[in-house]
Length: 117
Length: 117
DNA sequence: TTCTTGACCTGGAGTTACTCGAGGCCGGTA
DNA sequence: TACCGGCCTCGAGTAACTCCAGGTCAAGAA
Image 1 (tube, protein in one colour):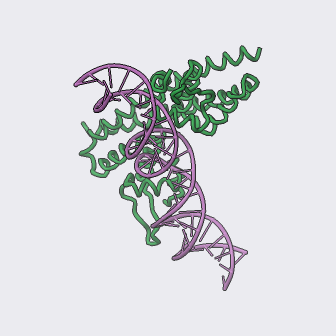
Image 2 (cartoon, helix red, strand yellow):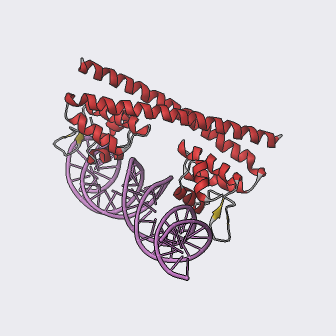
Image 3 (tube, helix red, strand yellow):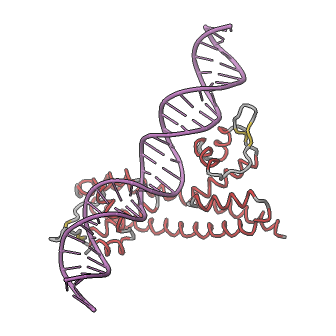
């Protein structure tokens, strides 16, 4: 499929996909005879994963390492696993941050209510 | 107190505090006779709030508007309240994103396990 | 057939929110 | 008196996009 459809399916923007490819985050993107990119379903799954990793705060450098491992095949699965486990710990930390911020907002809003009475 | 202590208490870095002040995000910062910034406890509370808002994804522009309202006193509390309520909805969205990403990681890790068997 | 439209291409500039480095002042200590 | 650490400003650098200019090409309208 074409880049616009890959964007619609993965959640990434067209520009971001091109940027990611330039950063070597997306292996195996082929071109049609017109020079346009063609994305396989596997490409799109990969882009979708990148979308969620980035959306939840994985830095580019880590994604680059992750992509390089992915490009090397199944032998790198243990390394990839440890990257994802690390990220999963980051998610837990983010959730704590959200909770902490929620508390602070709740306190702040309550103080506002007092002023509004 | 001095900027380093304000940084330690708020969670922001020294550089970030200076940057925020330059962006008019921090009203009423006074200077001592040495030209150095002095932060009141109220300043630090404000910085702490900024820290959490930013950490959880509030854009600078919104923080600027929020700070401008804060500088104008209690009459702006309804507007400030609505900014915080909006942000609280953003937090909910982020939490959903984390959950979604968690699911995706879990699936991915399970597939890895199959390869490792 | 010619013209327009729309999706795609590349390369490069612009944006956001910091982050760091250079160079300088000042009060306290060895 | 010489050095040190903490503060200052200004300006450049960074991460991760995001947008724009200028160009190609295929398909449909006039």
